Image (cartoon, rainbow, N blue to C red; front, top):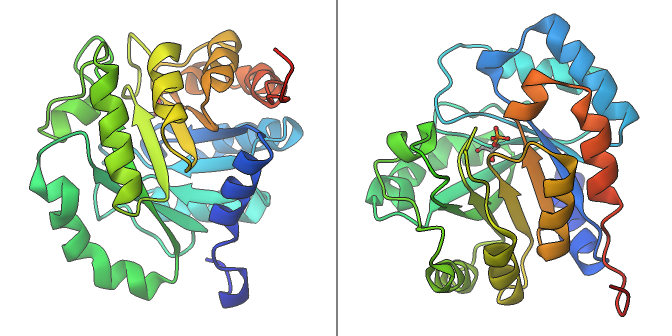
Length: 259
Ligand code: 1GP
């Protein structure tokens, strides 16, 4: 948790980076899938590779390791920890910020506003920096945990007009971030064409994740307009991938006039 005078610095850092056309890399940690040894290793590589953020959470966290996991990261490095909760139970004041996700691509009222109402007092009390996020699940080619758990249809991957209108609506409703996610382990990550369309019609930072397994894909996503790339699964399998991913993402900064 940040002190009062440091509040909002994470969102500000995201907005500043967008303004400067700098791209960020977020490593997603699912508390169910790490232990002390693997976490230690992952943090060391992430620090050396200049990872920008840790996202912590998952669609379905069944262990009670969340708080310990966040504390472990906080005690080992200064990379900001942002909660990416799959449910209101995945909240801990030890983190720095929270993606307050509203599933704007779905029509399940519980995930649009219901669970927010239930968790609001707890979140307010936590003192976490809250970042209202329009969460858009895009069809990733096969059912993922998020598409099953959310009980809502994902946005069709070939309907970029729907994605654009959804993102615009989210921004005009006051969301501070848009997160387009093909779901963890998606067979088909989000296409550059949909990223380009969505990014061209919003001013707020655009987060992209789900099924990104190569630095090349991360680079192309950034070139298409992604501001933050989130990678989980591929890194769990091969933590060394963090080095190449980070360098691809950070090297993709768009310089005006240069293609
Ligand atoms: C899932 O966007 C994240 O919600 C990351 O997906 O685990 O496939 O990298 P992966």
